[in-house]
Image (cartoon, rainbow, N blue to C red; front, side, top):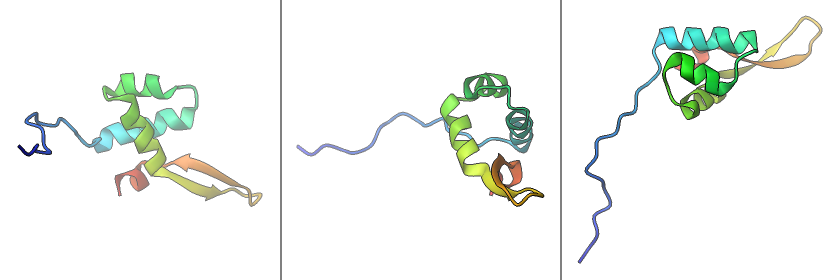
Length: 78
């Protein structure tokens, strides 16, 4: 007999909305929230927050020509 490589359960994945991304950007900019606290506040999984922060992180240049990384919601949405 052959084994089928699929499940019969429906997946419940959802994308973050623009409002949730904006809240995430504010929390990340504040710097006092952990990823678990951000996830609890937004009502999503901690791994979703982790992936979104990694996906939306961009490299910025300040006035002294030093690079730093910052989460920007628009780049995460792309």
